[in-house]
Length: 121
Length: 493
Image 1: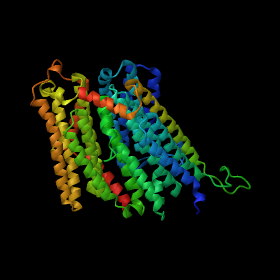
Image 2: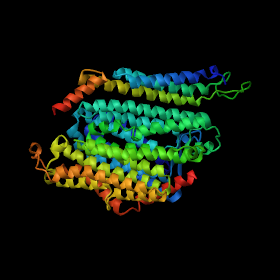
Image 3: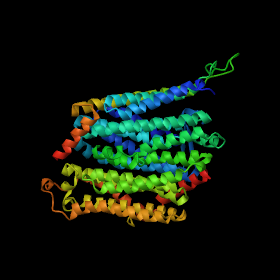
């Protein structure tokens, strides 16, 4: 139970926090999506790392193999990756539309435009 | 033969109709298929509900892989009730949508909205019916992604920003949920909800469970707009097309509440965790804060849709309030409010869709004198508003009644006062509508036209009548909710 034996968890936690921080702290809509992508990727690691046993093989019962890795987390994450790709694609598509409608992808400029619009009404 | 496959068909039919709509690319076909599928879904949901009443739990092994290895669909007293709510709302909203969509969206986008509608319906029904945690995540994302698209189809450019913000918040919520179930999976090695509930009883190590519990609560809390995680909701509801607002307000948050109930009472209820944490108190405080602040904010809105969006945040507070009381009456109140609020808000937003069609905008200055020009619409909105306040004879009263009973049972007399006071605030914002509609001189910009088309008004009134019906005859709503509450409390103790 040393610090190093759990390094995959430390990497996971670092990525998770870094991603979430980017989402919160950046005003650029594309950068926010990049942060979101990093955040989601950290979860892939959270699932995949514990599924691997050192010395473990694919779970096919055969002579001479005693330890098996669990393939299920990998399969789950395959699904999560697809979901992540779809989310990113949709997010970017919306950003393109926002750029067309507002002429900017900076959050504060968009909010300023909205405020001006409201004052005119 | 087909009867035993009903649980799978419940999800599969809307799921395959979405790509069909995209392939055919015809507006009338898209609408007809959406109506057909939502009506079939309702028929299946009602059949399942009756079947569950007769035989108890129905389980269905997808692809014949036996649970807990394969994905199991599991229908019991609680989720059969939610299935009926979701498919009933869809069955009312879909036929209503034809004229409203034609008026609010460009011609070439209309069929896409119906495709997303079917996809969203499939996602929501899937979340409800499945007995597998990871499957819930997949359906959650199907429902959410289609929701983002539907909101972005709103015609003002603010709809795009609202959809983007909801996408960020929703994805964070869903990812938190995945982290939570990942930790649960690491602890127990199972994803099947029924199996997991059994195995958690033997887990002695509390810390990973705590983390899982926290991640799931925050993740689902984002999805159901639990105060203070509700920031995405008002804009999303205000700028989405009217049909989408009506459908989402009646179903999406309700299904998320169902997931929360499932995790709290079926899964964590059996573990050592629930007794060790002050979950009740935290949820109670957040619920009350949500009810009071969101109601107050609603009073000062200039836009009718935005006002009722804030009111939705407050009404979700009532649902979580019932959960936090965690006794039979409280849970009954919560579960019955899923239906009561769904029907009420569905009716309100459908009627607002009619006003939007006639007046363009739904700000208060445009609404003046609408009681004379659109009498049926305005009257329906008043009934819906009274149901939000909780006047006897409407559905909202039934919920408040059970919440008050639950509060008294726990000895929280002050909570009774809070519930009554919050109803008075609700009366405040409903009164603003009454004042604008009946007591102000008409706005000359939109005097020309009369009532909304009969098909829109008719289906909106189906929900208005349901809202009154569930306030008078509670044998279906409270009966089903109490049965579900007894099942959940039985699992918890």
